[in-house]
Each structure stands twice: as C-alpha cells, then as structure tokens.
Length: 442
Image 1 (cartoon, rainbow, N blue to C red):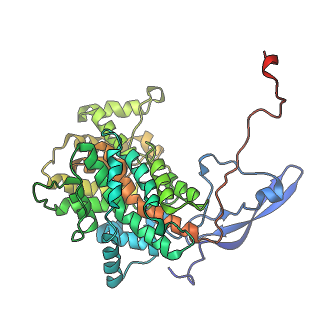
Image 2 (cartoon, helix red, strand yellow):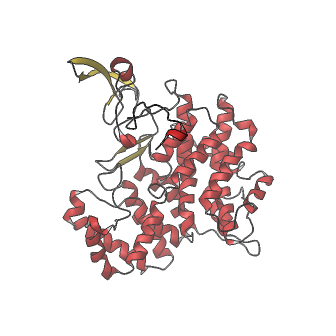
Image 3 (cartoon, rainbow, N blue to C red):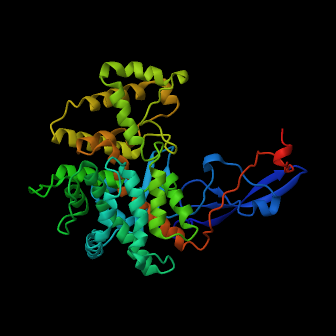
C-alpha cells in the first residue's frame, strides 16, 4: 500500500457535506477520506460556523483522530495491523515482532528484530525499590488495582523518559513499558498467592519469560511448555491493539494534556478494568460456569432472548463487529490446541461453549441481531487451562494491549493536528436561577 496508490489517511477528498439549519441556512463541511473505510465529515469548524455542536453518546459515529495503526471493518469481520490481516500475523508472527510493527509501521528486518528483542529484554527488571510497593497492598488486592498503582508509579522512578517532547525519551519509555509490564503483572500474581518474586531472564523470549516469572519457584527448575507459550503469544497478538476502543481513547485523551507516558498507560489500565471492556472474558467464563452442563444450554439461550429475565449472553456480539470476530476464529483453534495438549478434551466448560455457539449460530434471533462469538468467548477457557486465575485475565489483556496504547500515544504526540481533548455536551440541567439564602429556603 503506497502513498501513490492510495489516498493519504487524512486527506480532503474534494467532496463536501451540506448541512441545512433552520432559516434555510446552508453550511458546507469538507469530507475526508482514508486509505480504506468510510469517509468522515470534518466538523472541526461546525461550532464556529453554525453555533451548534454534534450530539453522539459513546462517540459511535465520531472519529477523534486519524491513524495509520489499526483498521477494523466490523461488517466484514476484518482486523488489520498496519495493513496486515490479523489471521496472518497470528499464524506467522510473534508478539515482539508485532510490537515492532505497531510501533514503527513496518515489519522488522532480521537485524532490526534482533536488536529490538535485545533492547526489550534489557529493560525487563524493575527498580528494586519498586518491589516494596507490592508489600504495601493487601494480599487479597485485585491484580488490576496493583497494576494501576504500580504502572503509574513508574514515572517516579524513571525520570529520564518522561519528557514527551524528546523523541529519544519517548522511545525509551515505550521500550520500558513493553518490557516491564509482564514483570509487574507476574509480581502482582506472585504476591497474591504468597510466593516469592521470580526475576526476569534475558535468555528467554518475551512470553516464555513471563510464564516462568508467573509459575516458576526457586526450589526447582521450570520447564517451558512450547504449546502453552505459543498459545499465550497468540493471545497477546490478538489483543495487541483494537483501534479507538475505550481504553485506547482514554490513553489518547490523557496524553493530549501532555501527561507522561506512564501516567497515560495507567489511565488505560483503569479503563480496561471495566467489565464491559477488558473484563469481558472473565464474565464469559463465569457465564459458562453458571450454565454448568450441556443439557442446560438451550434453556439458558431461551432466557437470553427474554429481556425481562435479565440474563445476558456473554462472549457474543461486539460494539464494532457485526460479523464473526476474526480474532475468535484464531482463538477457537488455539483453545482446542491447548486443551488437546493438556489432555482435557472433555473439558466441561469447552463442551458448554461449543454447544452454546452451535445453538446461537443457528438461532434466527441471534442471526438477525448478528451476535457472533467474539475473542472473549474462547480466551477465558484458554487462560484457565494455562493455569491463570480469573482475576488475572484482565491483567494479561493489559500486558498485551500496552503496545497498542503506546503506539497510539506515540502517534498522537507526533500528530501536528492533535489538540487537547475537550468533548462538548448537551446541557439539560436548570437554566439560570438566583441563589437563596439558607434561612429563606423552604
């Protein structure tokens, strides 16, 4: 995809949108075109020209930036990182190569890949004083609470990479965040189960290193299981970025004020914690547990179609995808590989999941509403099989999504059109009224 063959992602298309207001006042707004996807109406001068704002709860029809990183076509079930289909990346790439692609826009050469992997491995350790942070948390603290606090505190220890106007410091901060996030996540897990911290090893690849920090103990050697490592690597790839979702938009909004990158990523983690976002795979697993057995699936599906029942079908449908989530296809295959490798072909949760998927995909109600399985549907089962407790699911999501947040933050900082985020509102409160003294109020 060259600039000569495609329109620039933020170019004016030459088309105009016409807005007619009361009094037959007509205003022309420029229309911009991306390299692929729908056109956008540039309303940047709407208020100045008309005195009106747009009203768009949830920003479902609003583009808040131009980006070259990730493209989604929800109707067709397409997800691409820098133009590469997610299926190809998941099948042929690895997570660190995906990180390089998202950060730099191109796949690395052999030398670039080697240098990048070495750089990341050299940044995996935390400042030793930071290990004391964990003992300050309650033992039963949710790992996401620990992640929020600890990642935000990185800016207190790495002053030499907080100047967002210095390209070198931005680069160092990016490398540090990618490298240290697994270490923080593993420490949060170890602390929660009362085991000693396991330090990172530079001789292991990114995912294998994370697994040994989570599951190794000092009293015996830890053997890397290649099937588990590859499965987690794919999970990380599938969750690396997903365009302008809630947490990514939060990172961009925080970054638009000039906040340091560590604070911005901590803000993204806080947003990801929500059950409607990063906690969806945990919610899906809880749903499968609630159903319990295959014979109860049909009755559960019937309840989900009854709005008065309050029962929801978790793991199906997506805010963006109106087709089969392409990540779900990869995740389903990976789930089977892990369960077969571990000898749990008859896993009761998987049997429930398969039956639920079969019924839902044949049911006119779900077909009409385009409720297809999303990536959360199988990832929860897979993570459980890998040995992670449910409260670590969103933490793993954060580890993977860190590179997407960083790439989006980097693009935002370097965008000359970027301004501090300041959404408008439709005010529906009281109009002006006069203050009444306390002794005169009824």
